[in-house]
Structures are given as C-alpha cells and as structure tokens.
Image (cartoon, rainbow, N blue to C red; front, side, top):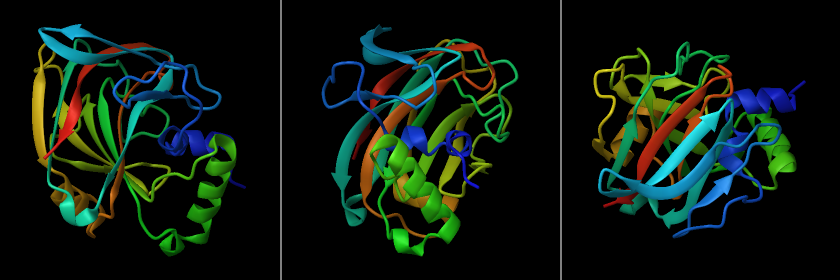
Length: 224
C-alpha cells in the first residue's frame, strides 16, 4: 500500500503544494509539506544581491513560482546560491538522508497517462493530500556533500524526480556560486527524452531527515 510517509520520502508532496504561510513576493510563495515543519523563507540582501534566505530547522518546505513556458521555448536557465555549511550526514542519493542545503527545482508538465499504474496512484494520493497534482517530471539541481559534480541521481523513491549535482563538497562554501544551464539538454540527459512545458520553479532547503539545521541564500532563478 502507498502511504503518506512514502509520498513524503519520494519528494512528491513538496512539488505539489499546500496553502501559503508567507505573503507572496514577485509571484513567489511558500509551499508547505503536510506533516513537516516548514523551512522559513524571506527576502533579504546578501553580499549586495537581493536573495531568498532559507532557514531550515529539522524542516522541509519549498518556495515556489508558477510559470508557463512551452517546451519549444525552453532555453538557458540561470541560478545562484550561497551556502555556508554542509549538512553533516546528508546524502542526496539515500532515501533516509536526502537533505540538501540548496536545491533549485524545475517542474514539467506531460502526459500522465504514460505513467505506470503505481505512479498514477501515488499522484492521486498526493493530490488528495495537497489539492494539487504533482508535475509530470521534476529536475532538481542540488548541492551535495560528496556526489561528483555533473552526476545524475534518481530519487530513490520515485523515477519522476531526478537530480543533477551542480556543486559538491565544502570547497565553494561561503560565497555566491553562479550557474547557467541548458535546461532542455539537462532534462534529456536525466530522463532520456525531451521535456514538456515548464510549469514551476522552486528553491528548497531541507534538514528534516537528518534532524539538523541548514541555511542558504538564492538569487531568483532566471529564464533565457
């Protein structure tokens, strides 16, 4: 039987969404995860940049913006993050330790009839819990503790969430890290097929699995 706990571990509930706790700013809003303490997100300046500040205390939630970009108009994306410390014991490839100090997530639409019966059942349960259907596929860029930069990591609980390691280890801590990626090419590499339309962009700092704390700053991701 597919349980609520399984959905939480799979990472689908934060991708769908719940009621916002924090007043939206420039289209961004807080998305809670049922049964989880919320990470706190706020706008502030960090080293002369306007940034989203994320503070996680044994918590997990997402800061999200809805978009509508057709697949044939997908191009480069830019994102920047600042992390001061890694999360001890975290492992983005391990189901029970999959916390990350920084991640940027891109949600894509697609034909849900192509999904397996088990995955469709999980989507239906996630929608019942959150009021939203999860994206057809999600591509996440993450800061990992040890995984090699550029590696593609499948979520251990679902094949509808795949991660690309953009930074790894402590060498680049304590400063802005700027990234520019070809989103369609990265999706093709991660999933083996072209992406559908882009429907959401989110940032997420979580420390719930390791019962620890994490902080990060994000410059709002840009398209084009």
